[in-house]
Length: 209
Image (cartoon, rainbow, N blue to C red; front, top):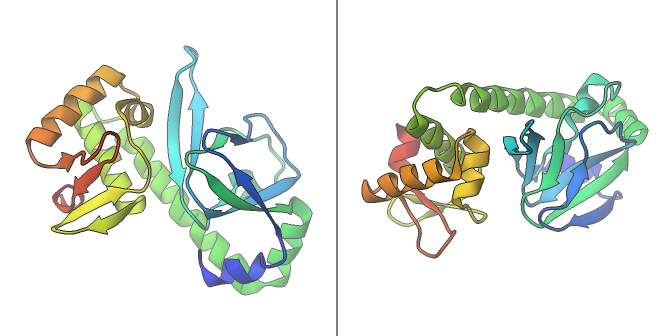
């Protein structure tokens, strides 16, 4: 977590959200802001058939909901839920707003962070329009390798949380069966591997390509 955020939240209460718990609901107009200390949060929508569609995954340092940056005037457009056990600092909207107004460096940092997240979010959404199912899965894996992993020996990156075929399907808008088929192909080609069950490791070759 960046030091500028650590300094800002040193006196803010900390709350634990277990894996799967919803932090903000679609349609909410919350009075609190959450800053992720550790863990991962998924931003998602639910389609007409009740299928979960993951739009983005946020890591430590994230500030949610995104509606904070528009003045919190509109209802939340998506669900925010803990993808892993997560610790978040919880602060009132008005308190956070006052903190940002009083600290120019914090304001610049948050706007820079937000612009980068929007760029990555748009890149993720753009990848969903690819006609090739394989390209959709590869784009999702490249995102996980770049933003949600740790380096392993010999050019491999291990994703920080369990990844199953359903999660990949939810990230790409394809069926679980299609995700399983593509992953099997990528395992054979040496691009990904599963040392144990849902532990996923991704070759740096995929990220560089």
